[in-house]
Length: 227
Image (cartoon, rainbow, N blue to C red; front, side, top):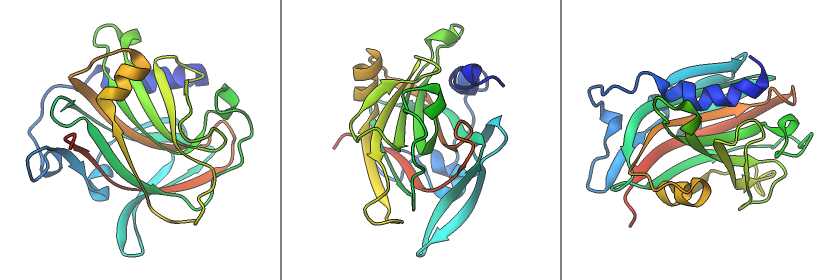
């Protein structure tokens, strides 16, 4: 698939079909008030797969006794995604943990098509319905060159906005990093949308533009109330 179409497909294609309600599974709900969907690594591996350029390998791993999804890309780009509405009026906070041991040197600016690869990314998607060009996404990325706090429109599709929540090689390789984002506030800030729900969550490790390799680990992903 031409790269210019890849991200558009990853936004619209992931949620354009299959959003009909399904019976809730254990990971779809938290165990207490103010808790939304909770996904342990084993749950994440049951998400659907979307391959864009070959396939990134995802498998269950254990790191220092902690379960994780290990992602290995080799000039590849494929992601895992979950399609179901999340109520942002009750659980707007997205929390997840991830770890990397190294970050590939940026071959080009991450604001350009040649540099649109990330050792780890987690993104949330608003479905445009019958108007796929209205689909919007916020991509939280572990950047290679952009500093923490930087944000920019994706080089391939302006419907996606990139946010660097981690950057560069970790000070201590292999240490787990926990991130928390107010998804509702981020859609207001980056897309001028006041959403009550988002329609899909996805993660990916990709290195097809650089043509090299990368590895990351993802821990539990959860939605929580604003407390």
